Image (cartoon, rainbow, N blue to C red):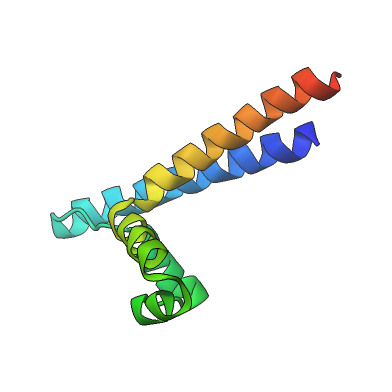
Length: 98
C-alpha cells in the first residue's frame, strides 16, 4: 500500500512538471502563458461539458463544481494530488507500520 501511494504521488508530481514544462515551452514559442484548467482536461478526456454537468447534478452542486473546474489550474491540482498521496503514504506507514 505504501509503494502504491508513493508511486501515485510521484506520478502526480511528474505530471505537474510535464504540464508546467509544456506551458513554459508554449510561453517561449508564442509569448503567452496557456491556461490549462481542470475543465479543459475533463472536457477533452472525459467528454464532460457544462450543460451535461448542470443537467446531471442539483443546481447548487453543479455551480460549485463548475466554479472549481473552471478556476483551478491543472498543475496546481496535480501538485496537491501528489501532496495528498504522500500524506496518505505517511499515514499508512504510521497506522499499519513497516
